[in-house]
Image (cartoon, rainbow, N blue to C red; front, side, top):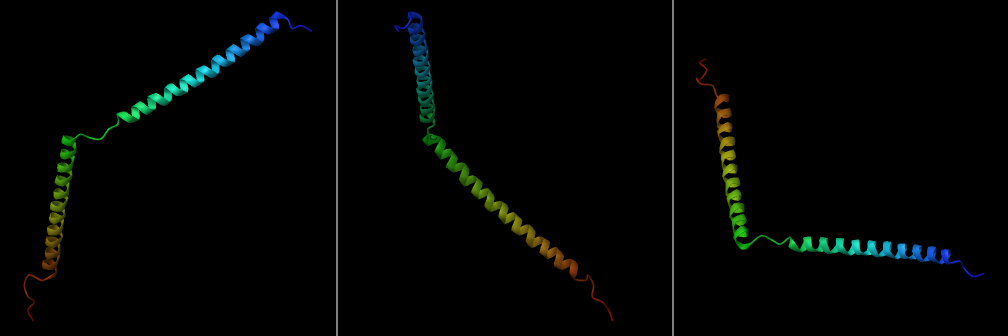
Length: 95
């Protein structure tokens, strides 16, 4: 029962293909992990100059919001005055 040389070559070829396939999958996994890690490291925060500009923009937006609220309050006040004036008769009723 000595194995035939053809059977030995088939087993060797299947083993080589299996080892190559597992090695390729491992290499692709490591390469993907490294590229994702490199991309994550490139996402740094804004520079000092940009951070200052963002803070200034936030302050400007806050001041605009305050002014818009003041305008809305003035508009509500004027609408209330108009409603009160419309409720009063222009001339007193004579009896």
